[in-house]
Image (cartoon, rainbow, N blue to C red):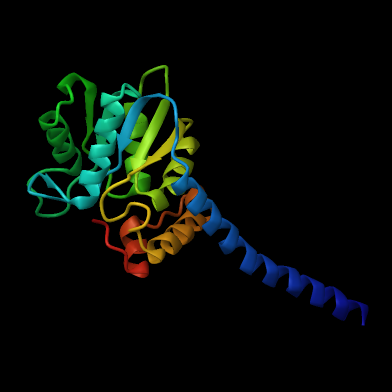
Length: 215
């Protein structure tokens, strides 16, 4: 009888954890995406998204626009654009982003182009290596629901990272889907349980599972 009670309590605790962990994580994803950073940083890091022959797609355009705003408001000194290209692309996400920024008044000397990264993790590895300044304070400019995972990865590379979420485009608050929110909940849990142990699921795999468009 005692063993039965112990087993029942263990099962009950496991079930409670199975329910609680996704709920708490989803709340954290939501909180991170709805509370953008204030203050200043050395760099704004624009995480890559789709581009077409050098023209940023809607998602990337929204991120670039927010980074430019931070730069013009003197909240950051430089902007880092990150991202490789897909097979058949004529340019990279990073180069397309840099060209857009130059065309919209950002000085060439204040743009750092990192032509690497096919997903959040590989992009983080790439831009973290590019930051050689003593000041490692960065603003990650990305979609609201992407903030928690992107910041967590950056901090794992000893960067003083905060997120500034976009306020325009298809993934801004009010437009981003609940599917995207739940996808990021799962992606965050996958990273802290598997990714930190060297088992990385690409954003493309996670996007396919969730049915979310990368932009």
